[in-house]
Image 1 (cartoon, rainbow, N blue to C red):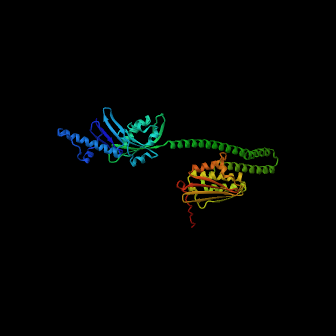
Image 2: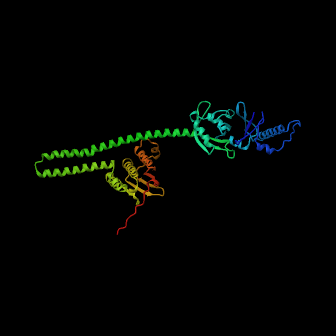
Length: 439
């Protein structure tokens, strides 16, 4: 029976001592002549062979006693078998056993020569039942071909990948494997580090569920906001434009009954005024849905016009400062998003805050475009709003800022409210306006 000795670093030493362990030829040479003597009647050739095997046995025993050997790989009639050894604990082994990650030493074909405590815990098997078995059998059956590829790749370079280890109870443990060949040993052994991904996968699953729940909530809010907007438009069409058109119709009937030219002219003048009001009202509703001036002249002009109309309608003074930023250079989606955010902020100020003045400031920082909206209204409980799912206007503003890659925050301390919008300039690139000199 021939045998091989597996060192903890993965090198396999082999010899030919029947029934005993073997050592390498280099080890035999390093020992020098054996002090033992053979009977003089033994033929010279046989003496040489016996002395060589004796030196092999002595070297192997010395390595076992010094703790250089973790296991013996013995070749016999039943094939190769790995026998683990117990003895002194080298410092490196104590370190590996204390690791929070799994570690194992594999032979070239994937047999487990050594594993630490953490690896055994991951797959819920005693360490003694892991030594000597093929690492391929520890991987989920559907992933074994891919693991074989990983072993082959590890003979040339560091090889990594995600796998599922099979436990004795049939459960699977997601892990990240990193395999590397031991340097200086001609690929005879592979080191494998096993990182448990169970907690990471659980967190990912939780985050996915939370994201799905948030998506459903935002979708519900979006549909609710759409219905609310439809109700508002329908109400305004009925109350404003509808009444104006009704008045126009009544006036036309009155015009039919007029007997004098002067009455016809006077009635015609009133009908013109009603028609003009109806046109203005329809235009206002249209601008509320989508301002065409935003497409034609950019965000700066659109905001200026909206602020002027807002001040006239709600009797709230608005101080708009663009700080010489040419907002027309922003992407169309960014201009629309900012317009809607500011439109919603001003609407909230008019409906809920009781403010008499609002200031809007644009500023170009080193890495962001910053927009600040401050009113002098009654304020609100910012913490309660932060966790509320019913503040559709505020939620919509946050969503729009997030879609643009930015953030939106609220500050309110009993009196007045401050809204801060920040959008990254790396994506938006708003440039200062360069004024042309008149000649």
